[in-house]
Each structure stands twice: as structure tokens, then as C-alpha cells.
Length: 84
Image (cartoon, rainbow, N blue to C red; front, top):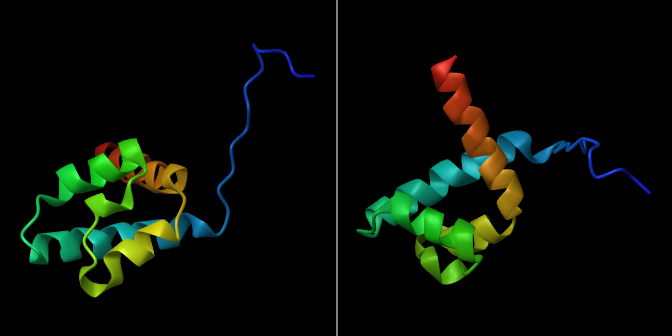
């Protein structure tokens, strides 16, 4: 059993680049559909409810192919990359 003071190592693997591509496609699809992409993506990430994402250009199907934690990791990585 691990001690609660230990740090857990989290590795993502192959989905790393794909999560970024999916996020960009979802962003474009939401924008094309007239939605505020940031609000809609945040709503999905917080709730897990895919109805926050439009069906336009299969966006809803695409976002469900990537785990929410992978999407969040990609966003954190991009944010930190811009500020480094």
C-alpha cells in the first residue's frame, strides 16, 4: 500500500499529440456553429456531458475518443509552453 505522502507518477503516452489536434478541431467546430468554444469545452471538461459539444463535423464523437484528463493535460502543457 502506498503512503499518502508519496507522489503518484502519471504518464499519458501516445495520446499526447492527438489530444491537442482534437481540441483544435473541437474549437473550430464550436466556433463555426456560433458557440463560445472556451465556455463549451470547459462545460464538457467539468461535467463530462458531451452535449456541451456540437455534433457539427463529428466534434462530439471526436471529443469522446479522448479521456478528459488527457485533454486537461494537453491544455496545461500548451499553457506552460507559451509562458516558458
